[in-house]
Image 1 (cartoon, rainbow, N blue to C red):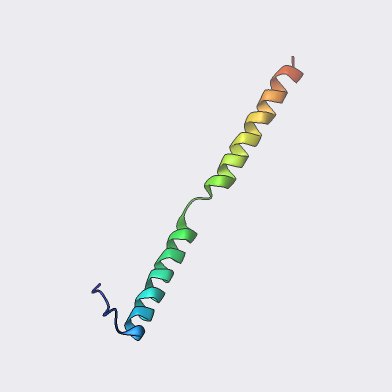
Image 2: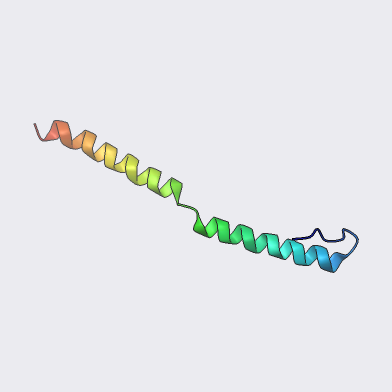
Length: 55
Protein backbone atom coordinates (compact mmCIF):
# COMPACT_ATOMS: atom_id res chain seq x y z
CA UNK A 1 0.00 0.00 0.00
CA UNK A 2 1.39 3.40 -0.90
CA UNK A 3 1.59 6.17 1.62
CA UNK A 4 -1.12 8.82 1.23
CA UNK A 5 -0.18 12.43 0.66
CA UNK A 6 -0.26 13.98 4.16
CA UNK A 7 -1.72 17.16 2.66
CA UNK A 8 -4.73 15.34 1.17
CA UNK A 9 -7.37 14.94 3.90
CA UNK A 10 -9.44 12.50 1.83
CA UNK A 11 -6.48 10.18 1.24
CA UNK A 12 -5.56 10.31 4.92
CA UNK A 13 -9.16 9.54 5.93
CA UNK A 14 -9.25 6.55 3.58
CA UNK A 15 -5.95 5.25 4.97
CA UNK A 16 -7.18 5.75 8.53
CA UNK A 17 -10.40 3.87 7.79
CA UNK A 18 -8.36 1.03 6.31
CA UNK A 19 -6.13 0.88 9.40
CA UNK A 20 -9.17 0.92 11.68
CA UNK A 21 -10.73 -1.98 9.76
CA UNK A 22 -7.51 -3.99 9.99
CA UNK A 23 -7.23 -3.36 13.73
CA UNK A 24 -10.85 -4.38 14.26
CA UNK A 25 -10.22 -7.64 12.38
CA UNK A 26 -7.13 -8.36 14.49
CA UNK A 27 -8.94 -7.64 17.74
CA UNK A 28 -11.83 -9.93 16.77
CA UNK A 29 -9.46 -12.75 15.82
CA UNK A 30 -7.32 -12.78 18.96
CA UNK A 31 -7.84 -15.28 21.75
CA UNK A 32 -9.69 -14.14 24.85
CA UNK A 33 -6.63 -14.56 27.05
CA UNK A 34 -8.19 -13.03 30.15
CA UNK A 35 -11.20 -15.36 29.94
CA UNK A 36 -9.04 -18.44 29.47
CA UNK A 37 -6.83 -17.37 32.39
CA UNK A 38 -9.89 -16.93 34.63
CA UNK A 39 -11.24 -20.37 33.72
CA UNK A 40 -7.85 -21.99 34.32
CA UNK A 41 -7.50 -20.27 37.69
CA UNK A 42 -11.02 -21.31 38.68
CA UNK A 43 -10.27 -24.92 37.75
CA UNK A 44 -7.08 -24.77 39.81
CA UNK A 45 -8.93 -23.47 42.85
CA UNK A 46 -11.60 -26.14 42.41
CA UNK A 47 -8.97 -28.91 42.29
CA UNK A 48 -7.13 -27.42 45.27
CA UNK A 49 -10.33 -27.45 47.34
CA UNK A 50 -11.46 -30.86 46.05
CA UNK A 51 -8.24 -32.70 46.94
CA UNK A 52 -8.32 -32.15 50.74
CA UNK A 53 -12.10 -32.48 50.91
CA UNK A 54 -12.10 -35.91 49.27
CA UNK A 55 -9.66 -37.46 51.73
